[in-house]
Every structure is written in structure tokens, then in C-alpha cells.
Image (cartoon, rainbow, N blue to C red):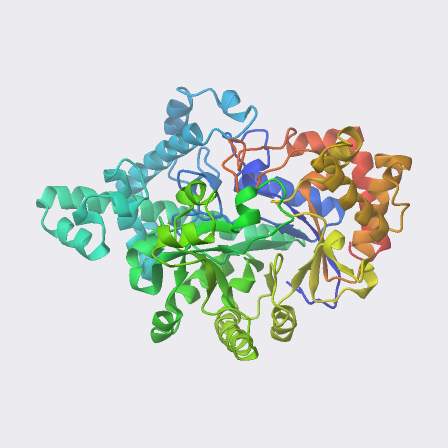
Length: 566
């Protein structure tokens, strides 16, 4: 697909799990994604951005996956003949024990959805193992051989997880399982029948990834046919409790945990204000990665390149330097009340700091820039000409954005954050090589801000919401006194046109902002029960048939056409 920044386009960001199909099994899947692609294509959008689709762990966060390569099985469309090994009889037998409508209500019920989809895939694998043609068996073996660099370790890790109560916390497994070397030795010492059973189970997990690869490649081709590009997402870091860290422990620093420095504007998060954001991701040992030509990073880029047309790197500035904590996130509460000296007493003198070095001197800044560029060039080389977007928000060193532009990596523009000398920067001053959006999956929807600003005037949240909306109004050329504006008649059309009018290559709209909804998918720094579980209240078919939504999307189409993005 032609994704040159010379041609301005617009897209919609939507978490796949949140999309609702008429016949889904309680979570958005690739079949639902096809429906969504049709819908956005009809409106005039040329891009769909998704969150990471890697296999998630117990917290179901797409940014805390148990594998940087494996695809999340719940994204698969499972129905009679999908995959072709799943028979109508097996499907009906399993569905008979479940009320699919109960799964479709409200939020994603991960435990039930994962259990059902696992059982359906096990039925399909049993059928494949007993009845697949020689041709399909060869295809499967070929896939396993071609992906062996990561697939072999992943399948073994999944078997070990099952033997340890489905926990990915390998550091809490029995001693003989805590390193991949000792675990493989343990496997070799088992009786032959037990070894064979575990090998067969490994084959099952490989089969799931084979089917996932097929379905995602097919939906990528479908998107191309509809003139829509798919944007994937690579988080900079990986989960400590992942096969990547378990199998390649020497390529990670396991005693330091990445995050972001203190940010005073996080008024609702005392820890972030005081200490920063502790994400718990282990740091990379770039020197070790360099010795094998960054093999793991290359595998990671190849995996996302197969199923997406372009991709975004979350926290791209981590390639240059990252803020590190000497404690795991679960200890944050313990450190919150401590002062600096008390913290040092608890950590043996180790304080949070930037790794590999801070930006306090010109020499440090130059070294960080040089090394970050080296690592990003590896990513670009493996991307093979596919466009790369870098999420460059937060506290960003002054050399990062110019360096990203020199590499051809598009950064982000959040209009309400783009200011200079107290003035909002107009959209026609944005660099073409950028992505403009009012909100990401972590941000509060605009409609929710509107309600807070008008309904909670005296609260901190209300004041912050009003300040944000006033900046967005100024960006759109509106009267910043939002009390004098009507959201639907005045504010919504103006801010959408301003976004589409800006000079950025991509104008991205969060699905909740497109539909003017209040709910959000994640509140950063919290473990709220609703994080990563919210679903759209209406199915895509219902959005299509709603007169109200038809009217709203006609407006959006007119604006996209008017501003040359359709």
C-alpha cells in the first residue's frame, strides 16, 4: 500500500477487544475487525490503529504480554470451519455448555472467554492431529520450522505455565523450572510417555499460533482490498513474566525496572508525582543484543510486519534512555511515603535514575542520541520499508524528535499539549511527518472531559478538564469559553475539522472521540477492574443502522473529503 506522508490520511484507533460483533464470543476478534474495516472504509478513513495483539497474561493488559511474538488466541475467529479443523459438531457441543449472549453483555469476561476459546482450539487441534491432509501437515511443519527462533521456546514456556497453575511468573516456579536450561534438563529426565505428552501439548500451542498467523494475514489482505491500512503496536518494553525474559535472560537487566520520571501534572497519582511511573519492565542489555546482531528485536519486527502495514513503537524514547527503578511495581506503596534518604536505605544506596545515562552533560546527550539511533536503525532495517511511528510523548529530551524525523519516524502531536510561549501551536505548523490526535487509549475521552468541566466546576478534575478543553477550542479556532458552546453543534464539528485540517500526515481519532462516548479503556498507573475490559455498547451493525450515528458519520465523511483525507 502507498503510505507515503505526501498523501494525508485519517484513521481510527480502536482496541480490538472492545469492538462488538453480532456473533462474537464475548470479545472482538478478526471477524469483527473485518466488519470494522468495512465500516471505517465507508466513512472515508484509510487506517485502523490497534493496540498490541500479543498474548496477554493474568492482568489482560496488551502492554504486559507473556510473549513479544505470539498472537493472543482470543483474537481468533472461532466458528464451524474457522479454522477448517473445527467441525460444526464440536463447535455446537462446546457452545451448548455456554450462553454466548451472557459473554456478550457488558465488559470482557476474560476467564470465561479464554476458557471457551481454548477448548474450541483444542477440539480443532485434535481434529487436525487425526485427520489433516498431508499437505496441511507439511504447511504446519514448515511454519514451525520457519518460526522456530521464537516458537520453540514459546511453546515450551506455555507448557511450563500449565504445569504451574497457568502462572507466567517463572521466578516463582519450582527451582528446576526457573531457567530454560534447567527446565529442558528436567523434561529430558521425565519418562518417555510423559515427555511425549508434553511434546504433543507444545504442538498444540504451535498450532494455535499457526492458525493465528493465517487469520491475521488474511485480515491484512482484506484490509488492503478495502483500501485500509492496519497499524500495529510494539511496546518498547516486555513483561518481566514473559517467555522472552525467561528464554533470553542474559539479554535483560533483571534487577532494574523501566518506567518514566516524576510528572507533576499527574494530579490523581501521588506515586507518579513523587517518584515517576514504574512499569516493571526489565531493561535491555544492548551490549549482549549487539553480539547476535539484535536477533530478538529483528524477530519482533518481522512478527509484526507480517500482519500489519505499519506500526507504532510505544515509548520510543526508551531507545535513547529510560528511567529505571531498583524495585518492582508491587513495592510502590512501600516507597510512596519515604523521603530520598529513607528510600536509599531500603535499596542499598540505589536510586531511580536514567539508564544508560542521564542527559545532564553534552557528552551524555550525544552518546544517548548515537546509541538510540543505532538501535532504531536496526528496527527500520528489519521493517523493510514499512512506515514506523514513534510514540514520543511525556518528558522528551530535546534531541529525540529531531533525530526521529531524520530517521523518517513520525512522532505524535497532541494539539492541547503543543504550545510555545503560552500559545497553542496551530495545526498548519505541524511537521508533515507526524500523527495528530486528541487522545490515545490512555487518555480521557473528550466527551468525558466536557461533562467533568461543566458538572464538577470546583474540583481539580473539573478545572483540569476545562483547561484542556479550552486549549482544544483555541486549536479549533473557537471561543475558549466552553460554557457558551454546544458540544454537538459547535464543539464536535469544529475540533474534528481542525484535526483533519492540520498538516500532519495522519489524523487519528480515538473510537470513543469519534462516537462522542465517555468511557475509557485504561487509566494509567491503576489496576482498576475496568482496565482493558470495556466494550463498545453497540455492535458495528448497530452503529451502521443507527440514524444518529449515520448523521454523525456523514459529517465526518464531509470533513474528510473537504480536507483531502478521504
